[in-house]
Image 1 (cartoon, one colour):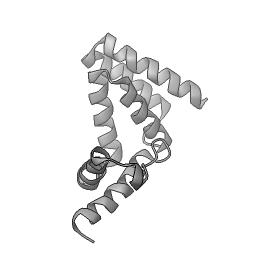
Image 2 (cartoon, one colour; image 1 turned 180 degrees about the vertical axis):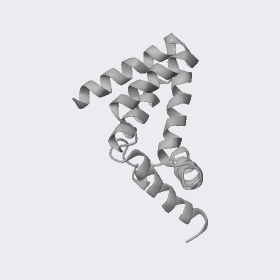
Image 3 (cartoon, helix red, strand yellow; image 1 turned 135 degrees about the vertical axis):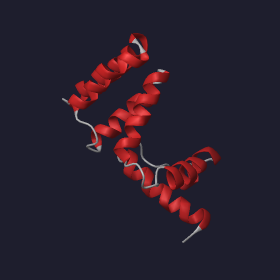
Image 4 (cartoon, helix red, strand yellow; image 1 turned 90 degrees about the vertical axis):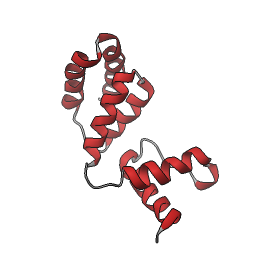
Length: 123
């Protein structure tokens, strides 16, 4: 299968691999153009490339959203990484220790709050 339908199937499969049970893929009847584009392009074309693995892409996203101070997305990415076995709790804590030197304490403290909440829920 090729074209839009092929990208859609590839995108849906990759979305499932990336987010698993943390963010269920929306059913087709609940999607809008934004979600369709996200599935078709971001997951069907970008995440599906074989140059970087999912863990590497996840680490890049965590670093980017940590730098931006986007705690909502940090939480989604952290939960998915832990659920998929891409990060251990120790590795997640090390991200904080490392990144505070690049993004500063105000941004890193937001990630620390997210990290503490997520890890506490898992214990």
